[in-house]
Image: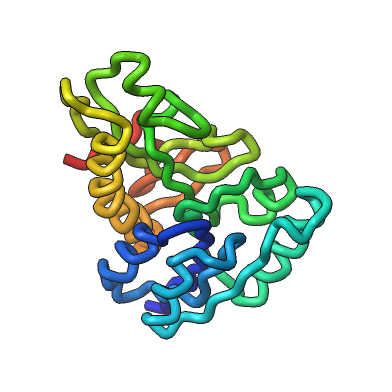
Length: 211
């Protein structure tokens, strides 16, 4: 089986990048790591793993469209089969997203469709949720609104604050993302023409829940 070529986009520590590396998916190769933040620690993780890395600083661009045009050109230099957003803190233009339709995944720290956007842990606590978690979805033009593939759930404990809850969710993200990416590498997962996520030849009516 030919290896799946993956480009990972990051903005920060790259812990989900590390989880993908540690998973050692045999038929997957991370060919590049790209960051919009020059000091992102994830770039060091890439260097330690002998993976090509690049920085495209969004502060050097006047608008989102021009940045995304150059980002698309940079990504395409690595001819990826899949683009993985791993803490990439940028809202992407519809043009860029459409270019990678069915080939771009994102992980979001909430049980989508709840708490799209930022500050998910604080918002879950403010809403007095008893359960929180993370979701992996195909990326579409709607922010955090693409078809959800899989989720992992964690209980909200009585003494939780945003930091403790977030740390517990992040630990589970490190299980969730490699599992979902492996499904894609195994050709079990696809975005259907109907706009739904398909797994093992059938549309997902509900996200898969990792126990």
